[in-house]
Length: 105
Length: 169
Image (cartoon, rainbow over all chains, first blue to last red; front, side, top):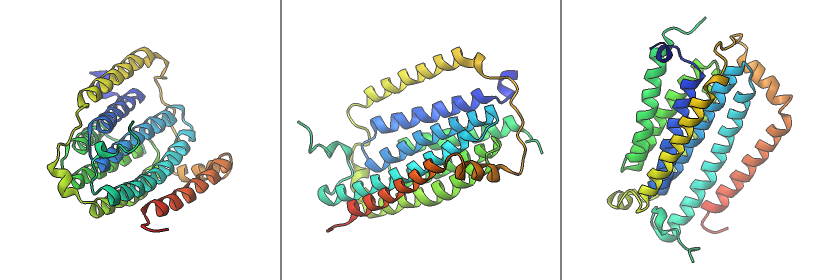
């Protein structure tokens, strides 16, 4: 009971792992490209949570700086990914990721 | 000022985040998924506040919930989701995905149970009120080069997004 009521770094890490797994399941199983991109955002957020929790654990700020850079990357990734999605939708009239098979041998 | 009722708020926010995450990957309608993701992101910003990271919490709300998610909603508006809602939602390899996620979860559990001892019991307390100042000092001092690289990355992303989304260059 004490382990549950005393919030430590491990609690945050377990929460981050659960969020990461949800993101992985979303990326691997969904067919809608928009939801796959959202699952990638979930994964990046899980990583951010871990970084901030470790930054709190060691009392420094380097983890927070790294989290800010990860958020920057997420913004860039979302912009480019959604641009590709619009180009894909214009060509194929669908958002189904199973139909992205032009390079399939 | 020390946080009050930390366990209660932690579990409340964790439950909100996990329910939001489950809704993101199970909703049929992409708009509902996006709204669930916004709930998750806001709960996570509150968790950042609990971890003494107010600047990152603000960045999370402004950039993620306010910027990236609006971009997502715009794109959902541009593409036709009516057809996607009528189709099968999960691909035929869904069981491979579940197995892979279970294996990854087992790995996480193994690492956490083994590595629990290396985490320090007492968390050092952090001086309040100067978080943003210290982040800025680090960002413009020690991490100057990475900061400039990030701005270059954003420039590349802007150009890439415009080139991808434009009909005729």
